[in-house]
Image: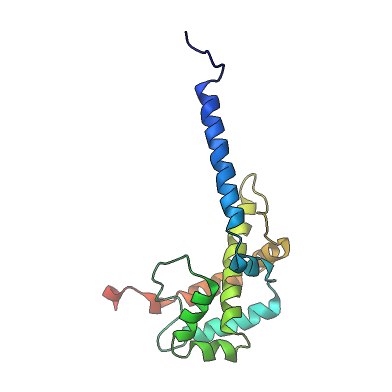
Length: 167
């Protein structure tokens, strides 16, 4: 008998995949919470990078090492939780403030660099395009400052972050 419905098995799979893509898109739009919007609205600037660089250098010089060393692997933190975590590290808040930033601005700048760095990579891929909600000016900023950002990344993840077995 065969094909009474006129729909091939691949057509049904295509419908299911299409539905899943739509569902994921709806969830992604719903996940646009205040933190996400704050990071997306943040404009990366040369003045901000100068302050961020100074703050990162000061944080790396703390006796306890860079603020990224004690990452517990929980990537789903709110901005408030990240600010509280950094502020709780001895000397971190003073180091950031002495560079002319607040701990929140430091965290938002960090998250904006991450988001726009990923977007810059995505745009460079074959068929890549600027993701929705990402400012082209920020992606251009990341591309212009690629070498500086790589130095900062190395500094913020420095040797102080080595495994305890290597200490």
